[in-house]
Amino acid sequence: MTGLLIILCLLLIGIVVVQIGRLTELAVKIRGEGEAQLEVNDFQGKLMFAFMLLFLPACAISALYYQDSLLAYGPHTSASDHGALIDSSFNITLFFTSIVFFLTHIALFWFSYKYRGRSDAKAAFMPHDNKLELIWTAIPAIVMFYLVSDGLVTWNKVMADVPAEAVVGQDYTEIHAQGMQFAWNLRYPGPDGVLGATNYKMIDGLNPIGQDWNDVENLDDFHPSEIVLPVGKPVRVRITARDVLHNFYLPHFRVKMDAVPGMPTYFVFTPNTTTEEYRQRLGELDRDGNPLYPEWHEPFDETEPDGPRRWEAFDYELACAELCGKGHFSMRRVVKIVSQEEYEEWLGTQNSYYLSSIRNTDSDPFKGQLLDTEIKARKTEFNDNLQKALASEDDKIVKLQYISYETGSAKLTNLSKYELDNVVTAMNKYGALTIEVAGHTDNTGDAEANQALSQARAQTVADYLTGKGVSANRLRVVGYGQTKPTDTNETEIGRENNRRTEFEILTQ
Image (cartoon, rainbow, N blue to C red; front, side, top):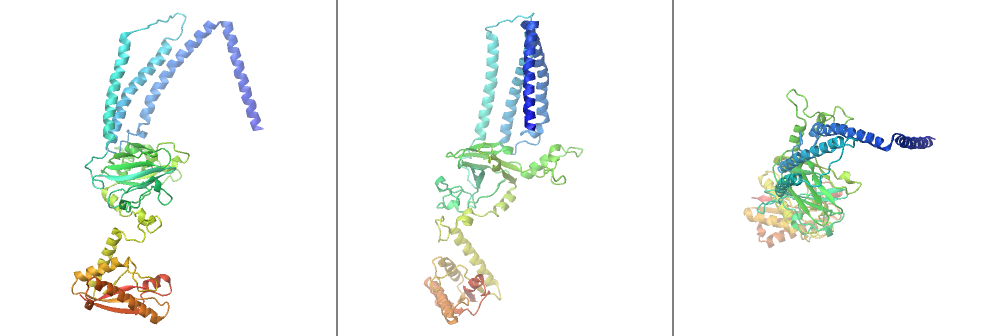
């Protein structure tokens, strides 16, 4: 019923409009078309003039009213070094285009009023005026030449790549941002400061960016959930796209670059304002203690009026400035600019994507091998344990944590040699060192068999050491079997801890 009433009302309005049109046509015929046209001209001319009086002041007033909400004005001055150049070029362009905007609109509406059709006026035709044409050609040409020249200078400075002599990881930081529907995949270099090679053919569910794991520079790269950068240090962003056109947009830093499938791009910028400094700018108070920017002192969440203010919850953001699909909005990522010390601390909490997700999977080209970093880490760990044992009065035992054997056998696995080489190095370094090499098992199986196995494994270790030049009279070999457990034999983890090879320092 409601729908029917709405349709009837619309039909009634249509009939009324048609009837008004017919009455107007009838009135024109009665008065004469000429007189009616003059009345329309007079009304339209006055309407144009009134619109000018309202429209142009509204443009200026609204711009002034909302200036604190616009980039480059109020608290929103650029947070990057190059951003000031862009804002300056924009203001220069705005100055000249505003003059043209207001003059042309004043002329448009004033002339529409002044030269409206009247019975006592006659049109004057000026088919050619050299002076006028020279003025309206030369002045725009001069202004355009200045604007283009200024823009070209700004462009060359803003779009410059890092200097050829700059060292990545020292003089600047390089990160990688890959756009996809609908997210940003972010990649940072690890301790080596260098991003590894990528290949789009290697992209899969486990390798979203297509990193080439044969490139050792990829092994320490990590994938953070947000962009964190140090203030005052240049950043070079590698920008790629995995599917459709995206746009890497950091509005507060005046960074905007397309992410184009098949065509890598980049942008270099230097953040000069930390997140906390920008928040303080938004929350600034005037001399009387009142908010300088009241809109930023409103609650961040309207449902929590006593919660954080908008300026307190502010974060820089990475957005996609292309309409890349209906999930486009979800590409927002938080960007944090922090001090160098905070940045270093954050880096220390990040884990290599390779080590956390790829290591020893079928995608790992180094599966079953030890990496140089792992060898160094194990050596450091062994040396630390050795020094503790040397310094201790009571605990002289060093567990060889990375020695393993084939199941039920005394044959060493290939990776055990790295730990044993650490023992050889220690024996060569400390010439007076004598040790007892001890083998242990859990309580699974026959006690005598366990005893024999532990003895054989300890002897295998001793044979490896003597084969590397360690004198046999500096070694004592003992198999303890299952008689000296260090953990419970009721759990698999406990039994694994009991199956061990260790040495005890006899003399040093």
